[in-house]
Image (cartoon, rainbow, N blue to C red; front, side, top):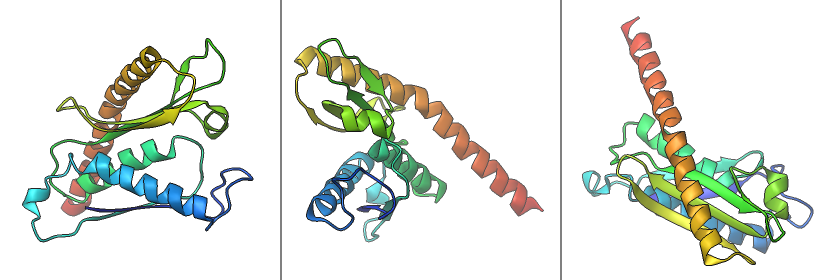
Amino acid sequence: LLCEFRRAPFAGRGARWRPGSVAERETEREAALALREALEPAVRLARYPRARLAVSALLLQDGGSALAAAISAAALALADAGVEMYDLAVGCALCRAPGPAAAWMLQPGEPEERRAVARLTVALLPALNQVSAVLGGGQGSSPDAWAQALRLGLDGCHRLYPVLRQSLLRAARRRNVAAAT
């Protein structure tokens, strides 16, 4: 499974990010690795022993929670393409604002992510109840706060899963109707 994550030059990320900079390329490389880590447990790679499955995510606008959205979108694309999978990988992002009593925010927008002191992205295979990836970092959070964030992220993934399944079912129905006519 080959994964690529790129950010369009106009996607936006604040003044400190310049398209093509070393920091930007490193961020994209880390996101691509996280994308692969999240998707590999979901795909039945043994069914494709000599194949190279390429997943490319291009971020056109950074509204926040980009990696989590890329995980879910890539899993949907693989399933829609007919790639055999154990389950859909569902991604959820969280961040925590500065302050002693700050709560974790699920699926934060770009402004919340920019101000955050801690971030967490979780990928879950909900039907198998298996975590496929956890990526996070930050400061000023206790182990209990991280555990709370993980529980919140897993709950968010479970709530998003039926929406993704319905999307796949609608796409399959549209294809069947189009093929019948």
